[in-house]
Amino acid sequence: MTITYCSRVAAYLRGDGLVIRNSLVSDTSTEGIYIIASSDVLLERNIFRRNNIERITGYYPSAVKIFNQTRRVTCRDNLVLEQPYSNGIWYDVGNVDGVFVNNWVENAIDGFFFEISKGAIAAGNVFVNCDKGIRVLNSSNVQAYQNTFVNSVASFERTPRSAVGDHFGWHPATGPAVEARNGHVFIGNLLVAEEGFRRPLLNVEQTPALCGTLTDSQLAKLDANAYVRRGSVAAQPIINWSPAAGERCAAALTSPAALTALQPGFEARSRSLDGYVGAIFKSPELRNYRLAVPLAPAVADDPVPAEIRKAAGWAADGARAPGAYPAVRLSTAK
Image (cartoon, rainbow, N blue to C red; front, side, top):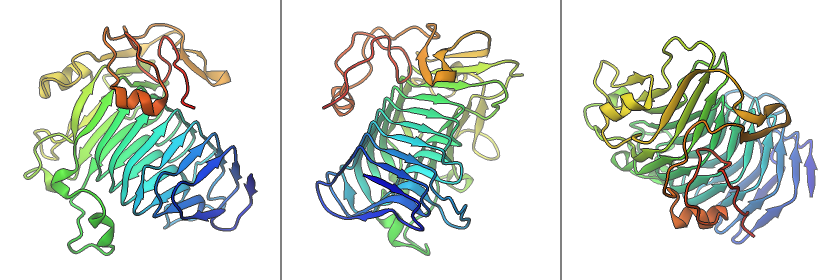
């Protein structure tokens, strides 16, 4: 199936067990594919490119919108490209148990956006030149394993937004309560900043108004990640962390070790390389983001739980390098 040049939504879908496979959705407006109130949906091996061709402002478009009362929607092996005025794939309010594995997202605002929802797996994805590769907002229990980020921020965010006094009160009512926006996991990821990219690579933030009430981290586990900056970095922070002491309840950290000191048990096996010179990937010009050199030693044990391996179609491995391309690339699920 090929859908191009649609003035609004290319396909508006509702139904359990839907499968969208091997399709091209291109040059669309508000959304390319819109899925609502559906369960057990599969989007696999599709190409989504050039959404929001009208450059609409005051509205938040996405190539794929997965919206409200959806359960177990899987996005696997999709290619999302050329989205400078649009988000990539957006699980927007009321989602439960999303699966986002082995996708490639390049040049989008938010590549994988999971908002006001409960439970997701994000594993084996590549994010290139996205404003935020992964963005988790006011959600719970997102497990991010073995993803590669190139000039793309991984961001976990929570705000006081609730059903009380909200213009769209039913939106926050579909997700976790403010105090339950936690339980996230970020393990085995590779985050690379090319020269000139100065933003923190990992952003964990909460609204300052929550500082006095939510003092625990949104993340339950954070470890075995690798952070790389090219060129002269002048002690640029790689992690923005909240809650922390300070006026705005945030800390700008220049190494995983600094976070370990602040939050014992986090990032104990992570590594950062500042001012790195030399090859990182085999061929970024050809979009080959397999590691050319062992930037960080593979952890001795396999940090990926069986549930994640099953969702991503990976076999068990004794050791893994950080990022979407381990030392031994694993099989894709059938």
